[in-house]
Length: 226
Image (cartoon, rainbow, N blue to C red; front, side, top):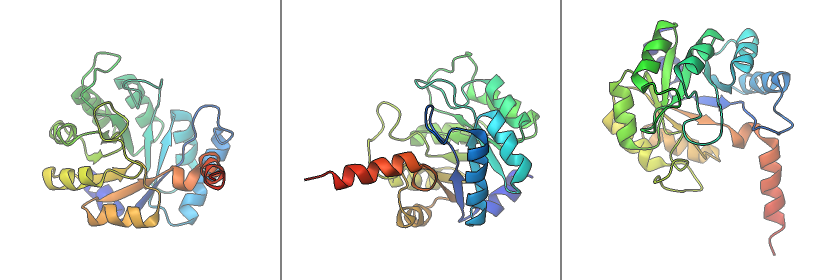
């Protein structure tokens, strides 16, 4: 599928992130596959998934594009941090490889441009996970096929918010020619719709749909208030 074909299929649509953090009871491949199948049944247009094993398992049974990544570590650049990680995700069947495209150093010393080149050579597209407008503009210039607001609020120096960074969505949508994907702390359908209204091509929702542990904890905290 070409970048244009995929962009057309995702325009105005929901991408469901089917992931679970380390130690979570949901972090099991067959469970994550069932989450993906549930997302398909509910009308999701694509799946975002972590780890080549999970990506391969989901692509085997889900007839939707899979945006794959490989989280390795929990500090610095850890979303598809190296060229090796990126190629492995592409080879697992991901239509798109999502990778950290911030200006922080990558652990293998590679550049984001080298990662883009390797993923394209492997037959997949690239989604640049960024935290700022400047990073998104640079990533698009380096060949990223999509730019996502995934890392805003999670990188030092970016605004801490309880909801999505809609200002970044607006700024990126006005500044780059590639599709902008809104991701990060989208908690309600209304926030997802607002992201689209602010210029997002599509939206990614994870925790609010596929994270029962986090959702339960939120309710517990809510009813515990005096």
